[in-house]
Length: 488
Image 1 (tube, rainbow, N blue to C red):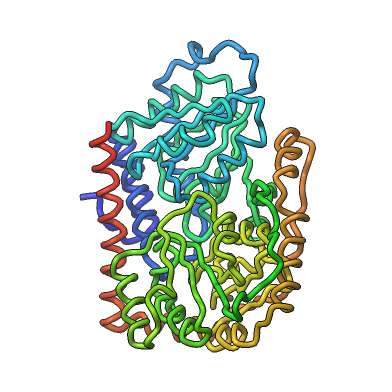
Image 2: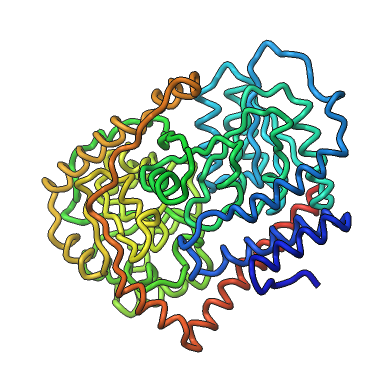
C-alpha cells in the first residue's frame, strides 16, 4: 500500500498521513525503503547526497516519539570517564566506517565508548569488535531489540537520554530513518553527523542541529559550497603501521598490483569493468594482481574465464576475501602499485596504501570526483579514465619511478593522515578547526561520456542488468535482516 511514490511531495504527504494516523512504524519504513530504492539504482549514484525534505520528516517523527518519553526522569549521574556514544546501523568487519569508529576510540583512550546499533541492516559482527578494539579500550556494544522500527526508535531515544554522553557520533547507513529521527534538539545532545555515506543519498545530511563532519576536501567543499552546510573537516586517519622497509620494486622485473574493495564498489554498471580490465592488465604485465575484498562467485568466474582465454596462469590473480590490515598485506605481498577500486573508489584503503609507501593509480570517474578519490591521493598520483591509459602507464613503469612515487605517497600520509592529528583534534573540537587542502586540479567531469553512458542504460540489456543488480542488493539486505533475527 505504501510502495513506490510518484513524487517527493506524495512521499511527504504519505509520511505525514501515517504519522497523524499514529502509524509511526510505517512512516519510518516508507522513508527507509525510499532511500534504499535510490541507493540501489546505479544511475542515482553521486547525483544527490541529501534531502532536506526527508531529514525534516525523520525529525518530525522523532519529535512525536520523544513527546511520549518522560524527559524529567532521564539522565544519569556524572561518571569519572567521559562518555562517547557512537550511533550505527550495523557494524561489520569489512566496513570502512567501522575502522573510522575504531580510530576515534583509539584517539580518545581515556573515555568510555558505547556503540548503539539500530541493526536495521541485520546483525552486527560483535566478535570482530570484542576481539579487537574492545580489548584495548573501554568499549561497550548495545544492539536494538529485534522489533519494529518504532520500538527501536523508542529504545534508542531512551538510551540516549540515559547516557551522560560528552558527544554522540552518528555513523548511520544511508537509509537509517530510525537513527536520524532519534536525536532531537530538546535532548540537548552534542551530536556529530559523520558523512561517510558521501556518494549516495543519505539521511542526516541536512539536520541543522547536528555538527556535520566531512573527511575529504571534495566532500567538504561540495557540502559547504553547493549544499550550504556549515560543516567541519576531520581528515581520515589510519594508525601508522610503518613505511615500506624493502625499497626495491618490481622484483624479478615483475609488476605486482593490488586493489582492495568489496563487490559493492566493483560490480557496478559503468563504462568500463574491473572484471575485464584486470585480466587485460595481467596479460600485458605477466605479473600478479592481488584482490582484497569479497566478490560474488559470478565476478570471480568472469575474471578466471578471461584469464584462461588470455592463457594466463590462474594463480597470477590472487583473491583474498578479507584481511585484518590492508596496509600489512601490501607489505607482505610486496605490492608495487595500488590500483584504486573503480568505478567506486575507497578513501580509507587509499590512505593505507599511502602510509605503506605504495604508489597509486587513481581512476578518474566520468561524473564524480568523490568516487575518484582524487582529493585524497597525493597530487602526483597517476590518474586514468580509460583502460588503455592504465595499461600504457603500467607498461612504462620501472623501479626508479615506483620508488619516487612511493616516497611521495608516504609524504602525503604523514602530512595529512597521521593518527596523532586526530587525537589532538578530538580532544578540543570546540576550538580547533581544520581547513582541508584545495581541490585537486587533476579532475574534470566528462559530460559527453556521461551523457552517452546514460543513454546506453536505456537498452533492454542494461535495464535488465540494473534490475538484477537492484534485486540482488535488496535480497542481500533481506537475508541480513533475517539472519539478524535468527541471532537475537
